[in-house]
Every structure is written in C-alpha cells, then in structure tokens.
Length: 435
Image (cartoon, rainbow, N blue to C red):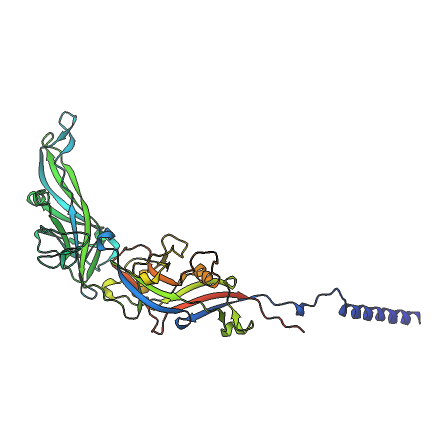
C-alpha cells in the first residue's frame, strides 16, 4: 500500500514539472526569433540599369606605344610596317693596344655588322618561319603623326608618303625569323651596307621593317645596329659598336571600323566604352521575394558585392589579342565633354587592372567575365551629401594602359541576347510575423 502511494506521488511530481516547463515565464521560444539574414545573388538585365552606350576611339598614338608591329595579310588583311630611326654609329672605341695600354682609337676599320630586331614572342602571331625585310627611306617624316598614307599629319600640314606604308626603301636586306630559334631576327650587313646605315649626312634617314610572309603579325620590342670594327692600335682585336634606336612607331591599314553594337577596350589608338548606370531603389526579384517582403528597398548596406558581367565576343581577326588583356573601369566626371572628359581613379584594387586571357576573345569567345564595381554602386545608393558634386553615374571601360597593344577586347552590346548584366549580391533580414 505504501509502495503504490509513493509511485502515484512521483507521477504527480513529473507531470507537475512538465506543466511548469511549458509555461515558464523565463523560457525562450525559438519559433519567435527571426531567421538568419538571407544572401541572394541578383542579375539585372541591361534595360534595368544601363543606358547611353557610346564607344570612342583615338586615345594615344602608335608612337606612344614604344613598340613596333609588322603584319602582312593578317586576319582581315592587316598590313603593318615598323618605322624607326637609329643613333649614329660610334666613330671611336676604347681598346687595349699591343702594349696592353688602353687608349681611344678613332681609326676603326668597319668589317660588317648586323641589325637585330627583337620580337615579342608572346605578343606575336606566327605559326612558322617568317621572312622579314628591313630597308632605308630618306623622306621627311614625323614619328608622332605618321600614318599609312601620310609621312606628316600635323596641324595644318599634311605630307603623303611617296608610296603608302613609308615607301619606297633602298639598301633592303632580308632574313628569316623563327620562334623556335629565339626572339632575335638578325639581318647581316656587309661593310658597304653598314656605311649606308651609318651615313650621318641624311637628317631624314629612317628605317622600315616589314613582313614578307603572309598571315603573320609580330610585335617588335627593339631594333639596334651592331657594327664589327678592327682598331688600328690592335688589328688582331674586333670591337662591336652599338647604335640603338632613337624612336620607333608603326603604321597600319586598314583601321578597325567603329563598332555598331559592341563594347570595346584597348587597341592603338585605344578604344573606350562609356555608359550610364542607374541603380534601382528597390527590387522585387523572385529569389528575394521568396525569403523577404517585396519590394525590398535597396540600400548601400545591403549590397555586399556588385560587378559588371560582360560576355566576350570574337574580336575582329586583325586585332585579336595574342597576350593577356588588362582592363580597367573608371567613373566619368563630365559626360558632356566626352571624349575628352577627365576620368576618376580606378574602381579596381590593383594597379594592373583585371587580367583576362587572350583566348577569351578568340577560341573561348562567348565566355562571361566580371569586373567589380561595388563601391561605385554603393556610392549611387548612398551619396555623400557633404560632397560638392553628386557622384558620377557614368562609367568608362578601357585598357589599363593606353596604348599597350594593337589588339583590343570586344564584348556583346545592349541590343544582343548577351547584353551586359549588373550582378548584385544582397543580404537582407527575413520577414518576421507576430503570432
């Protein structure tokens, strides 16, 4: 009897304890707490944020590139000639005579020499041996303004070449360059040819380098003249005298036509693509609406990341990249003064911009690339009210360095199915409903 009473008492204690637990005033009901914030990626089509695309060319000159380009029947029949001037060949050398004493010898006997063109193997397109020709021209020319048709194209003065492409030339020498043999194309010269290239009486004397092999485009980093000479003070010795190039540029034809519905960046002279950005004040994207109350106010604090998403397209074959493409994006301060409007600082965190492989514009075209613009988007959503001017709403897509190559990058434009997209990664609190 006592055992039964004890069991009944313990059962009542357990039930009482359970009842107290359900109604405890200090307990926390997890169902009443808001869920964790939701992070969603939203991709806005061009029509919801972009407008007024314009592509401008003509930034920088071929002379500023500091490189040479030679091409023959490349891509869409590109023809390019490298033009340069060389320093005067030294007329003396310090040598050790037969007694072992160093002295300056001005009686040098020229034996021959060579012109060496240094080819950028990475920035060049050639599948096999390339025949090259180098020659001299004596026409007055202006390196900063010279074009395929004009030797001088300065303000108020134009002077055409006798032949387009800086012709004709004389004392021409040929050689064959092959990538597997190194980066140097060597043109051997005899003493008479060295004398012609060393002639200081012609102030206008220039040198032209061209490709004779079709379907090639070479980037030339440097050209120099080496002269072998025998000093009179020690005839058993041969000295090498070097004349470096003073200036180098290139002329080419045909120029790339202005794009119709395409974003373009790079080239020589360089292209820039400019467009306006309007960030919506609220969003009603399905992904967001499934987790939060829509429309959702878009604030700077809710934007974790923003980027331009562009789809690459096959660049015009004549100007297709063969080396890494470095792109930058900068705000445009005054669109009304384009193409001369000053640009703001880069929106990217590296001094070399965003790097992309050349294949993205040739073999792997139709690929997506991203360029971050997070701070730019945040500034539009939360402008600095203390600033003298409102934040710019216009962006410029351009090459990080202008100019850096004859090649340029191409992207699909707004009227295509692969138009630019604004990607936003947004974090927002979930909706909370009271019981």
